[in-house]
Length: 128
Length: 128
DNA sequence: CAGTATCCGTCTGGATACTG
DNA sequence: CAGTATCCAGACGGATACTG
Image 1: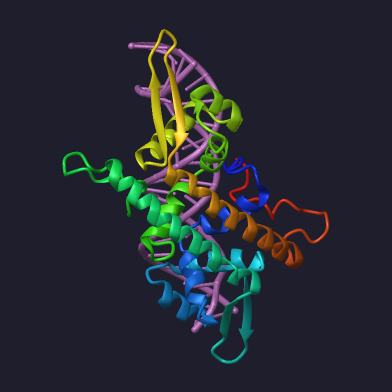
Image 2: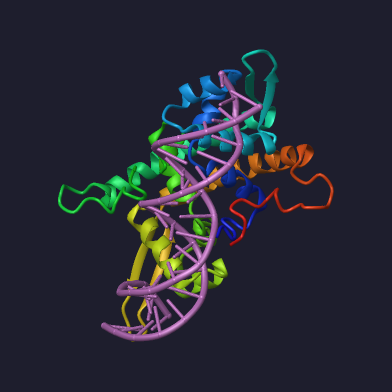
């Protein structure tokens, strides 16, 4: 899958990062400064360790977050956004802005017409 | 899945649309004006009828594209972006811009160190 | 503390074939 | 022309259990 979302490598790269669950929350949590694994888990909410670990790995590999290991009896690891990672904010803002627009567009048309069938409108992947 | 990507409904709404394969290309194709199903299929490229149909349905339902049926022996249908749909452009630009940045960030670190494996940079979900 | 290893269900996309 | 109906394989995310 994936083929080409917009026929543009950079667009795809962005989608590649933002298109996955939790990434947005992780970035948001890290915008306030560096956090340890546990703190991140707390900040993000319901994310499973494995998921957080996987995402963090991807982000680290892409150079969007840095991983700093702090040796010591209780090994600690600090994650922090890189400059590139911080750039996510502008995109998030643009998306949120457009998101509001399309949210309204959907409502006005048939997103939530009255009460009958409903569903199929906003549903998508539901929410587990 | 999906839970919360950024703890923000509008952000999620945007992801919901952009996060799916082909949507970007469809928007791009429609930016030049209305197109018929077949033309869209041509413009997008390798997309399967069913996929195009599904995406178009979603976009229509969300009020991002309009569907105009032109009766006649050969029934024709014209698809066109709505004002909300056109707003996609700003987001796409922001994403492309950031995409370039993270593409470089990834390369510099370990995305494409030299020549060996490569692939792991732009790959995402591999390629089937 | 900070992960990693496994296992499994769900959802999505793709190919093919058929219809108004 | 413009879709829709099926079927299928695989990717992805989630929960649980275990380790340095």
